[in-house]
Length: 268
Image 1 (tube, rainbow, N blue to C red):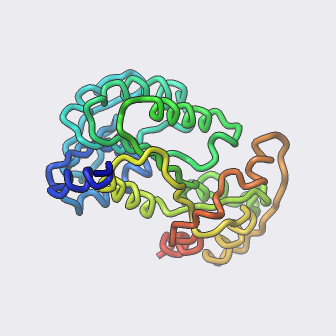
Image 2: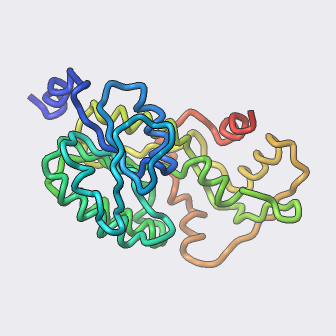
């Protein structure tokens, strides 16, 4: 009997599965909580700040210090590890803290790790740390699934297109982006619970590849702005990697919600 069939037989009564979501107050963590409240899973969540208006069991947890990690993983069947730190202390939180946490999860049935498309080809410290975490998980004995996604719509808007300067969006306009809806990715991760451990899976990428200039122009159109786009290149390996689309996957246009649809929904 293959592993996947055994897993499905085991979780026919899925109500007993206890799922831990780390990083519950982050963008992905919040999307996971919105959808998990409509399931039969027993859900425990961790973060440094308790989310408001959430009825799940909550445990304080800090990957920087290690406080709360052991309590968080106690009596858990499945982990969805959404905790991460792109800007500050990534070496500790995404690698050292992750390794310490991973060592505590030897008893779990399934460790689901959301990652990012192209991290081995994009010269950013945070991406290197995510790739190192993937390797730690792959080389462990913990049953796991690694799912890479492209950048979230809201991330692209907040980082590159938050506000025009003197009625100009100043962007490295030719770089390629394949942004995806965070709720669609969260739903995909939750579906992965039932499938069981798969190792590294296919990427979960957005429905279209656009240049950043095109995305800025879409925002101007949707919001009926009078702004313009000023495009510029910047030097270095990072720019070349994004220019080459190393953060995209043309063969995995899985998401349905486009960047334009995201902007329209946000404005309504």
